[in-house]
Amino acid sequence: MGAGGRMVAPLTPSKSESGSLKRVPHSKPPFTLSQIKKAVPPHCFQRSVLHSFSYVVYDFTITAIFYYIATNYFHHLPQPLSYLAWPIYWIIQGCVLTGVWVIAHECGHHAFSDYQLLDDIVGLILHSFLLVPYFSWKYSHGRHHSNTGSLERDEVFVPKKKSSIPWYSKYLNNPPGRVVTLAITLTLGWPLYLTFNVSGRPYDRFASHYDPHGPIYTDRQRFQIYISDAGVLAVSYGLYRLAMVKGLMWVICIYGVPLLIVNGFLVLITFLQHTHASLPHYDSSEWDWLRGALATVDRDYGILNKIFHNITDTHVAHHLFSTMPHYHAMEATKAIKPILGDYYQFDGTPVYKAMWREAKECLYVEPDEGGQSKGVFWYNNKL
Image 1 (tube, rainbow, N blue to C red):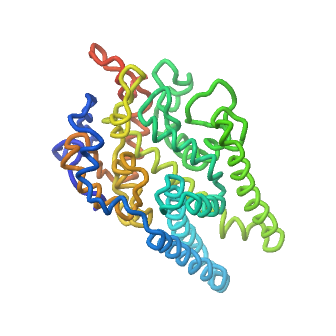
Image 2: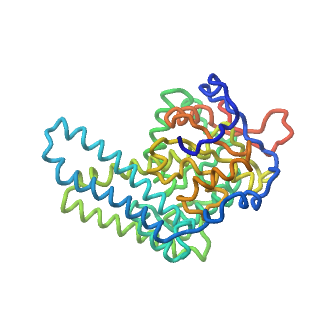
Image 3: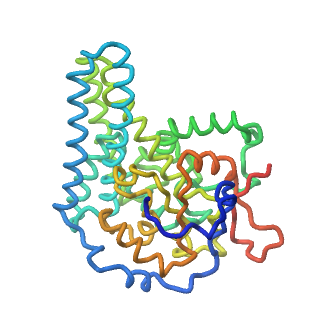
């Protein structure tokens, strides 16, 4: 399932179960980005407006069908069945809308079409619908792609060094503590990141994706941050007016809970793409773009790979070629794996197990004791 291919290293069943995976090489790769690109069929870099829009139509058709069923039939169900029907609606709608989020993400990478303006219009509409400030995220996410794996310049899920972890971490380094940490991360992690830059790159003053004059953005970008804020405010006002007509619980059930699931999946996907005991991080003495881009891992979400437009199992290719549309990413992944060799990472551990394992094992980063590469940092959990 998923991207297929090789695990991080050949594993015996016992090693796979314990999560003892071989580290990715951290030395400079014996290949260049140009050599990787030559291995990818040229048509994989072609963007089609019609092809891209077909996924928008498909996702919103499914969304509309389930909205129609929920609003026209659920109130006719006897109580025991309605208690079952609503969670099913929330899960399905949340998963499909995560796919919509991914399409908006492609717009931010100019992977939707050959027309930047069209990409920005579509991305602004889709992300605003999901209460995401499109341009604000587009620029910070672009810097994440430019600085992946850098301890000083990466923008999101930047691991802390052991000397910087909070004093209370040792009290959360246990099963109940991990449950609380994961619950807060999956429910509040995304709005906390957007609003307060939690888990993001540290800045010398307050940073927020909603602040046009904050340190995240340049003077040239500030007007578009206002546009992003206006998009989120417009949708928020629409939801307020809807709540006045239909009631707050109606809005929460139809829109709010699926949005929480979208936010949870977004955080989980990003967390698992960049958090793994085999992944290196680099300080400025060691970091370069290619090694940073390769410091990510493909995962297998089963049937959700397709629903999420393969953002989950083609993430390595995405970091190498971010303007490539998702519908070519699987073919590109298969093409680059022979070139990347051990630098390509795929972990097929079930997502719920991987989430728990990474939360347990990846608490901070530090160089190997006695190692020669003091600028290469690895995850550890010994407090």
